[in-house]
Amino acid sequence: MPLMPLMPLMLPGYSTNSIGDIPPLDAVPQLADLGYRSLAITPDHGLLDPFAPGLAADIDRWRAILDRHGMARVIETGARHLLDRKRKHEPTLVSPDPLARKRRVDFLLAAIDIAADIGAACVSLWSGVGRDAADDETFWNRLTAGLGPVLERAAERGVMIGFEPEPGMVIDSLARYSALQERLAWPEWLGLSLDLGHLECMGEWPLVSEVRPRVAQLVNVHLDDSLACRHDHLPLGDGDVDFPSLFAMLAAGGYAGGLHLELPRQRHRWLDTARESAVQLDRLLAPYRSP
Image 1: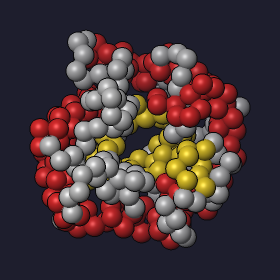
Image 2: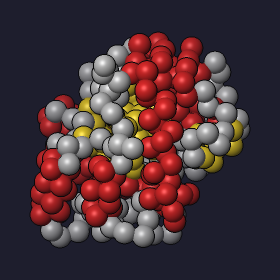
Image 3: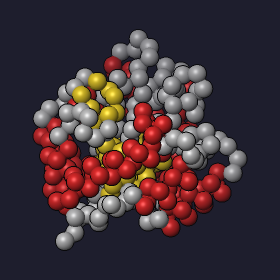
Image 4: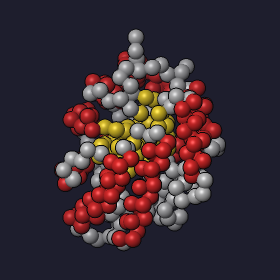
């Protein structure tokens, strides 16, 4: 059964990094038929690749099909091997080599341009793993320096940046995210991109109490279930995340944006996963539908 309209506008969403077997562009009509109303798009090889020819035409195709099916969109920047075919998620904003960090910054600038041209609500990014023996202050300095031009471009193009705390990375928790905001003096174009499963994984309990003060900063939400201390991205219902309480808190806080399922380990059965997850979301979001 297609998902019904919601109030507030919490939009059931899916992620291209969780689609397998077919080109993600071809999956859009099927997701729309299941009731999904937002898509988290990860530029990658063969998918809005900013370094490949024909990007403008690709953007036009994507924008047209998303508009036709009434789907909102955000841009993610977590492609595993777009910048380095051998090392996952490298280089990053905290890599030791300045030229490597610049490659990441240049990619993020391109992602912002893609977001603006495709009509995306935000660009989601993370800090990266600290790979060398630098002290914490050095990692902070690398990160804030790299974010400077990113936030400038975001302001120029009118695109919000959603910063995602990621387990195992320099910014791995909501507390570290808040520390980043303080170091940057709470810039207008920097918000929070939050994976609800990561909260459980990192033991940020009670989850509702941790998130509630930051709801106004939310620009993007990822959905996956999780067990404590395990970064697994489980299907909804297979872990310990208290989604009913979290959804109630998001609704009460006025969150209006995508709730994007991020289940890359289910790519081999993505359509079944999308159907099953639609049923779960239908139940979870039932209290917030328009009468």
